[in-house]
Image (cartoon, rainbow, N blue to C red; front, side, top):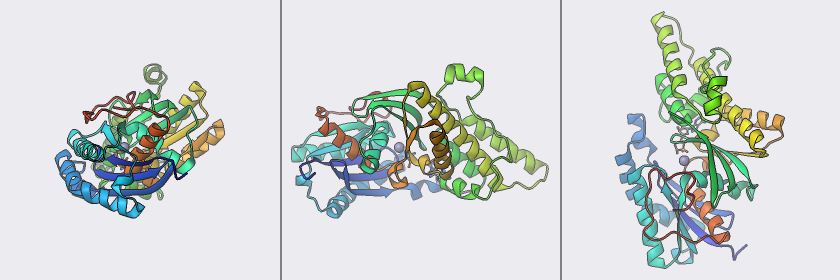
Length: 348
Ligand code: KG4
Ligand code: ZN
């Protein structure tokens, strides 16, 4: 294993400055500095604040990662960085840092797709990815179903959200219920004391007519509005609103649609491995329902541990390492920070 490539990955697409180092498929360190607290009072990530925080955290986080892994920058065989998609200014900080390192040390640089990296990270925990794998990626910025024949160069989008991301819906509903940002973990916690069947909230894009055009797409904005109306009406009538019941019923609606569509996609495509990633993959109800439905359908479920599901540098290093081992040519040093990088482009 010691001759496997040593790869350092940098992630700055949103509010986490992540620096991960892997040797082959072995994770040596995953250092993360988050600016989430600076965004809390705005109820969402503020791009300019995130960029500035990345600039301040970048060099110290690289130093910390190297120190904890017991490696020197000279030892690194290749660098990888998130090229996109994400916040333009935030991506620029990571891409500029990675170019400087690659240029100064004369090492190859891989500018990789953030979504593919969310898939590749699972190899650090559960070993090589079956090919093909089907991936459900759900976070504050994205909600996608992907068919992944080869994570280093063949990723095919099957569906995505047509409005809010799943995590965004959690965050907005949490705000409505008076819970702090980011709201997902709070809804998850509060919902444990609620009845998920108490309120029948709508399942977006699930009626037969919608399924014809949007079989694998998601929509959460109607659900968010339905929750807001429901709460408003109860308040107007002077009735008590049970926050646990609303949280549990909302969460059930999101998780029901996500898992139903993911399992249907596995069946339709003849794929027997489902990987769930992104920050929302930390949700306890999503994990439980995915496990139940996958077991019933004979599908193997892979979910990385929560720290590897949220944005981090290890996922970028993991994808870079796969690229090196598959013999893919590195990116040119003029590689862009591409805020709308299509998921079909794995390498910039
Ligand atoms: O992957 P991530 O760290 O960053 C983005 O790329 O967005 O995901 C953050 C999102 C937030 O919307 C947060 O509310 C959500 O993931 N999240 C959760 C849970 N933990 C984090 N949503 C539901 N249940 C959770 N336990
Ligand atoms: Zn992400």
